[in-house]
Image 1: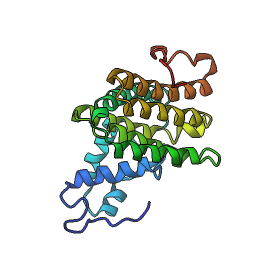
Image 2: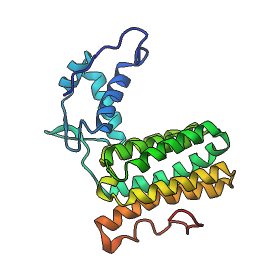
Image 3: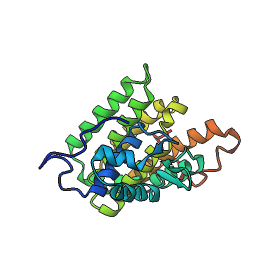
Length: 246
């Protein structure tokens, strides 16, 4: 395990957090960064020692991660990072497409020119990666792009669901773009379309559906690559395109 400063300095990041919350965020961050990959065994005593706390808050953190399906627990085996589950990935992407679409539509009236400029700059960085593709960096930038667009969502419940969806995705796959790199070229063009709709003050429903189709198109590409014969099954409810997102 990577050695870390276990106890945050007074007034520093995490200073006001409970021990359970600190342990939860510490473990989740390492899952998200893929330091702890699928199947990695989480030894509670070792984590507790690193974080300079008892096993009790670490166990509480593990239970939270288990509820989020990022961690599994088996008798005589213990806790480990959840293995990649194709069905779970499909369900998570379908759900995220819906809630992220809503969050983006609700955010749209609150997005300033500065927000859109930042999002365009991130997308430009993604375009620059296409010739020398780095799937993990591309994925991180993709998440940054979308977080700019849904970040101002005024509904905290929807925003929490979006964050949970992204967190769950980070635990069940490294990068869809690593598996279907050709999808990256379509993705950045769809980003431009979504930005155009927001900048032009399009109807919120049009923005919502564009964001949803964008997410589900990535899912379709994954399914087509994994299971060519069943590519149309998982997202048969995708609404017909209204232009600009293919």
